[in-house]
Figure 1 (tube, helix red, strand yellow):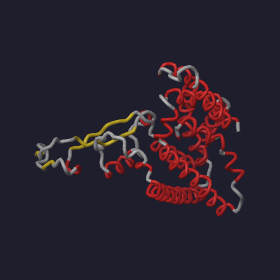
Figure 2 (cartoon, helix red, strand yellow):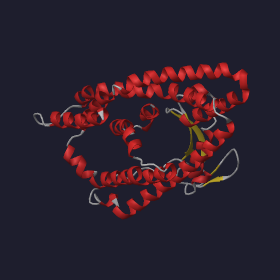
Figure 3 (cartoon, one colour):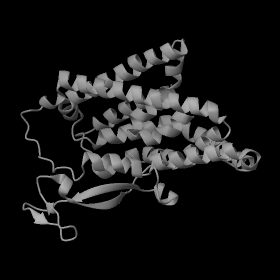
Figure 4 (cartoon, helix red, strand yellow):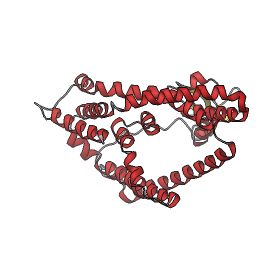
Length: 314
């Protein structure tokens, strides 16, 4: 509830400051207003790795592998089912509402074609499951890029194959590293470590105790940071509002997009998922939804699923 009040306070503060004088704020002034929120966001992101990795290792390490296998298979089934439903819902809403046609009179800039292929994206996902360096995985993700050959068909000097500008699958490839935490690789490593600890029996208990202790300490710190959520979210939202040239113009420009996204999230989060929860647990979902309030409010205020992870785990 406190975090939800922070959202309301942030919107009120932003609109109030925006209404003063001519309503024009420089980027530096808006940055100063949103600065406390930026510090709060950094604190949340700082906790992601030291919270997730020990928690996963400790949780899996103390489970019976037969039980964990059942839990894992059900988790995968749940994830695939909800993802399929979310994608289907998104497609149906987009086809029905067609938010992109709301501003059809505006001249839209043509974006450059993406320098990736679907196959490379899927392979990169699998590659990132097994990072070559755990330290690097905390900071970077691997991504495959393709090199634009120009407008003419040329021959690859190393293979002798022809490179066709119209067929991206023939273009040369190069690897790159993005400055983004490889959460997937760290999760896979944590799961493997937890399984190894569980299989080690008595010899693995000292390491299990260590990760349980780290997890407990990190959760304590997370509780401290979560108590700052109302203030941090409020200033984050206020700063973003001040960054807008005109709040009304931005809302009008993105109105149909906002309606489509909000409708999709509402149906998925408050209709589809509660129905699944009720069918599986045979209980009403209202109490569970109420406890998810701080995580939902933090996600709204920070616009970052990664930054919301510590609050969700808490």
